Picture 1 (cartoon, one colour):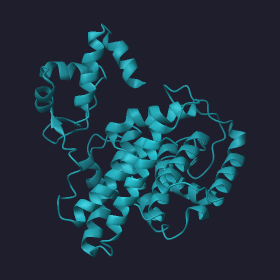
Picture 2 (cartoon, rainbow, N blue to C red; picture 1 turned 120 degrees about the horizontal axis):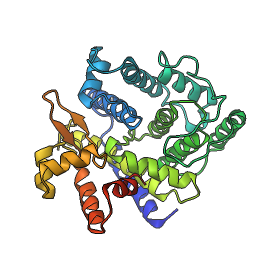
Picture 3 (cartoon, rainbow, N blue to C red; picture 1 turned 60 degrees about the vertical axis):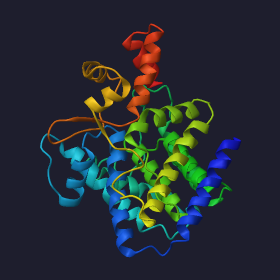
Picture 4 (spheres, rainbow, N blue to C red; picture 1 turned 135 degrees about the vertical axis):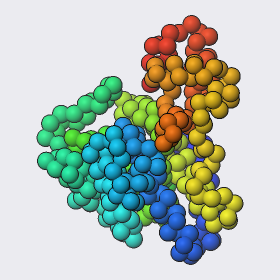
Length: 332
């Protein structure tokens, strides 16, 4: 483990100790945070997998049972199913990570795919799988049951890792086994957060804007590279969640605003980076920029990290790369 990550783990421990000093937290605050995280975790985890429900639409589906026009039944079920799976996960947090069983993981997966793909929900895959655009080769399906037994044995052995690293490693091992036809990422993130909450940490949110870096760091590790980038993404996510809790208990900030994550309209983004609105639209159409959500009024909203993305695009354009070549660089 690199020195920088150990320093990050120390920072997490300090913030957790600060949060623990405020416990027990007021019941109204806990309820508010729980509901906020329930929607945010559901929205982001599904968005990473391609679900097009916005954050607001996810809340309407999960909290109000409202059907959103233009969205598929599967997308609605992905929202309600993830929220139900998270609710079940929360009932298990008084246990210990070494007590997590294969049956627990199968149950999480069953909740995720219930009503969407009942034939595969809660069952290991019996066919080979590939991820579109990835070079990663996953294990032969015949090996999956044995690999999951080994995974359970690894957890039972109580590996001496920091809680954030243990959670991240469990997530990594599960998605690398890729035991299911679909739903592997969502199951792995729920498992990761189960372990974090068992250890007294808040759940980690892998944001939609972190999707490319998150998937790329996983693939890098799965193809023989270092895990450091992946671990940094997870630990940063844990730190953000701790910050949200600490800001809430010290009344510094409303929990509806994530550490300067306010979305930007196209004009605001264009002004910040010094390029025309038409250029932003073109790069979005070409897949170089990602829309975070579209408002009810039709405004396309962008995450602030698109500022850095645009800076990267401009740097690559200076090297005379085409938009297609830039797109390939960004996807890596």
